[in-house]
Image (cartoon, rainbow, N blue to C red; front, side, top):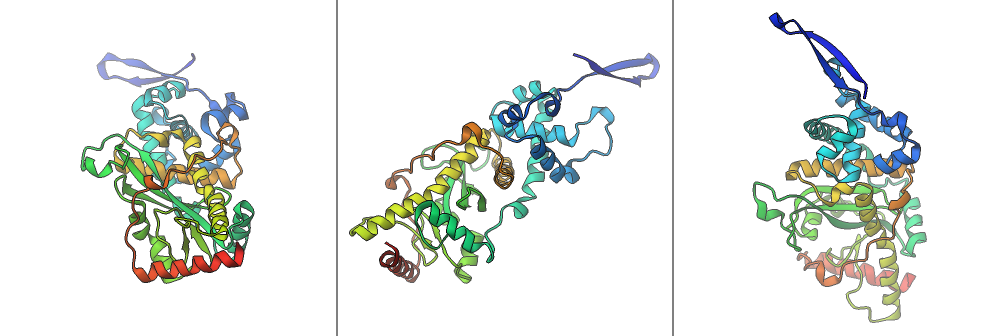
Length: 345
């Protein structure tokens, strides 16, 4: 392979030649389909992402054969997409394995800073359209979001290891996601160890605090691990009437969007199935993938072979006991659910 030669002075020993192996140029050598398969994005999308993070990643000089922003983005995208070792990515991209780690950290941090720009809850002007899409999806009225947690498995951390062991005995970060009918993520919480219950993450989230104070114009659908509140609808534990059964069926069809979202997120970015990093790094990588997922949704990046059916819902007894919420909140939530059933089902 051709090389780039740099000549520098080495004191009394004279001049030596430093030869840098010419790096691959994926944006030039791969077809659009090959780019999707390897990086999960096409040429225009990759250039768009590079422009977003350019202010944080742009090097002032190409001295020492520095990586361009596009090359850094490609290395990170390859890491998120394939879930393999640094050495494998380093060999395919023509860099050292330590460079891959440094680049992934830098790109992840730069993307995570864009979270508030790309992950936003529907505004008042968008609510009507969101409700319509959810109703077309599963016949569930007045729905503005679906919520669930998903575990991002990590290696055993060096500090407070026991906090990250989830109910299945694996180390993880428990990530709360709220999604819409288009599988875009509209809210997320990425900071809790795997041992923390879904309902606690929800109760201590900014979303809960805001919506408890200012009730939203609609409801969020959740499974039985979450509390039944005026703006959070859960299924009936036991459907005693045909109307309640129809409600549960519509609830399940609609809430399936969050299960599908979780599946697509981890298929699009296979690295989220297991991260060999400490918790803080895992959170930054997860946030970066969430931002990239929404970019893919908004830019209509094709899902190709990762457009699979949703994962089956876990059995109810695998969700863990819900946390205790104030009685008046649960009663008002139950009253609203009871009012929905005869009016719509």
